[in-house]
Length: 93
Image 1 (tube, rainbow, N blue to C red):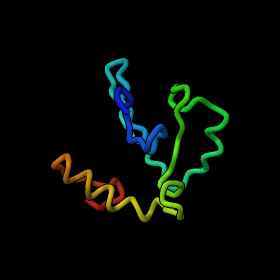
Image 2 (cartoon, rainbow, N blue to C red; image 1 turned 120 degrees about the horizontal axis):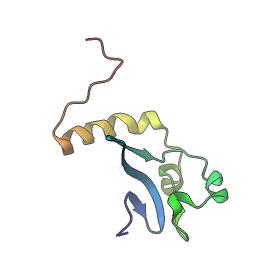
Image 3 (tube, rainbow, N blue to C red; image 1 turned 90 degrees about the vertical axis):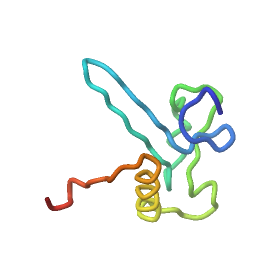
Image 4 (cartoon, rainbow, N blue to C red; image 1 turned 180 degrees about the vertical axis):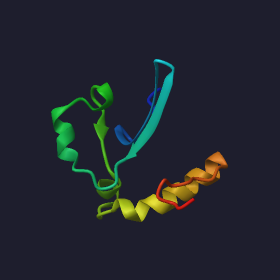
């Protein structure tokens, strides 16, 4: 929910998105919770947001969702939305 970044299911964050700028370097990334052990979040305040939780695709769908099931559709959608071609460091050439 605004003004919080990321992807939310109610009051629980499903995907964290972040950008950091410092010392003339910009870092960015995201974390999509697929089959994350959510009990670890009981020991911290996730993303520094009091009263907000964390969830995963597996939890929300009630079935195991492995990263390898989500990765290719996610990358395909990323390329479409950002009109780009992703290149893996594992690709030859």
